[in-house]
Image (cartoon, rainbow, N blue to C red):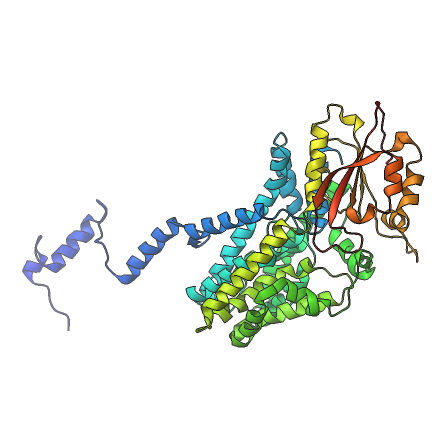
Length: 539
């Protein structure tokens, strides 16, 4: 039953009803001041807003700054060479385009060279690597954030620890390799992938990152095939996922790739198909070496995991079912790559962060042996990281610094010339010298004609180096001023060196593990003449 209003209640300044009516009448004349709410929800919102102001990438800014600082240190403590592609598929291409003497990745390095055209050579060498170090740091933080969402801060901390102390990650993550960019984009894409428990899932963001990884290195499709298939199977609105997410993203990125390649090649080129044709359909990768089918399982995977291997196996048994897709992805990637004859450690680098999830899960559940395990993991990886980063295979980089000094210390640059007598692409080229100095190296283009017994220039040279040199440099005018070789070749070409007046002027340590055509040291020989001479390189 409704309670009737009293006369007093109807009077101005009267009871509650009067106040209400008065408030309604004055609502149009001024703003109403609301009292501060003291609910938990209100304070949580305020705290989150305040926290965001001190956060970056969803994490505390100090964590990100620490990771960036660590990767910058990482960058400067890697002074060795790994594979030719870290120079010849990035820095050398960019240097040639900017300076005219002998694509994310391409844009990244080319823009750096264009911006710093007048800077020192060392600066130009390190800037692209520092940019890669920054991207790797962002990926590290994203992996930490993902695990904090999926599990808790403790698990995230140990996964983060495993990621940072991985010797192979340390060895690769600041190199200008397409494999490194593929790994970085894979980690960031995984952050937005719809894993069970993830709060940051976004189909457009993760599929865009996957598409970009595919454009940079088409092998990214191998790793992402089981993940994409799982997403498709679990998605209730499958048609919407394909039509409104996957297809638009794929169309935009592929169109962008085609336009970029059209500009640079001068004709319409689908480089992803060429990549597939060269490496899979024609299997021309075997030209650069082949391994047995089990190599990734027996050598490749155990080597890149290093001392993380027992923790990875232990973590596979302990991890919840929702992580099975990550394990399936690792095994699938290893199996697919095992079908290809040409194998390299760096090809399976993108699966390493997936493995760190299981390693971190293992460390979380260790109780009694946790401290010894952490010490063992840290020290063993520290030794491997420092040895491979500062000692193993550094001679081919040190010798280019020497050649740079030869160029800049020579007042008449046209009188100096360099011939690199090594397996082709053993050293970087003009990107590390930055001087229009005549240089030449042994060529090794792959056979595209289908010859049964194809030999490249390097193969012909190593069949009989002495005869090749006498035939190639038939007179004094054609002799270069400097020869660069591995120490293993010195005895075989000593007669040529003596007859042509070459003297060893510099020695650089390269590796404790010489193998095949690779020697333990790099030797530099300089031609010594009493009078002036006019040397011309034969190209």
